[in-house]
Length: 174
Ligand code: AMP
Image 1 (cartoon, rainbow, N blue to C red):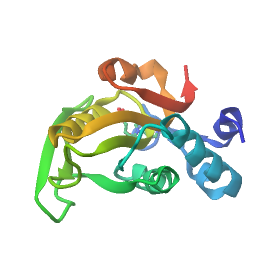
Image 2: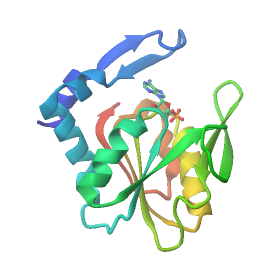
Image 3: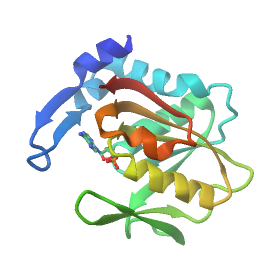
Image 4: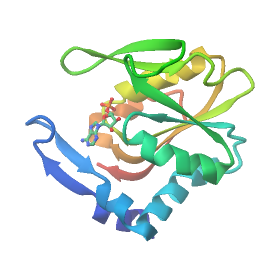
């Protein structure tokens, strides 16, 4: 299945969760066996020879895609979560939203200097969330191999804030 076929399955939900957002609903992709397999393979494809030891996924939809990508790459999985959700010792990063700030956390032993980490999420929009995740992963001393997403909303210019990162998107909306 091609990226264009995957794109055709992504459902636009105008006004969710707030009036100004057009939400990219990936549940039809996840529900279709061929599409789910293609999405996982296409996210992993550029990084097959990158020596990835660890795939990091961002709560919540990153948790759905990152573990099968980790299996594809023969890597482990670690979670990045919103504030107060992780049980062990954490590092935190506070990042800007359009209105206010948000916090992302990672376990302090999730990765280290021997690890080569691929960050996976469903959507990159402004890049604020991925930027915080990148800082947390690098802050643990790990090597960030790249960021892989199913969908890039290119008109929000998230790529610009990740200019020293190898960012790969399966489907890009201009
Ligand atoms: P951002 O920090 O602006 O790049 O937003 C990225 C995070 O918010 C990701 O974890 C996405 O799951 C979610 N997100 C942002 N915008 C959308 C959208 N239009 N549709 C679906 N998810 C979105």
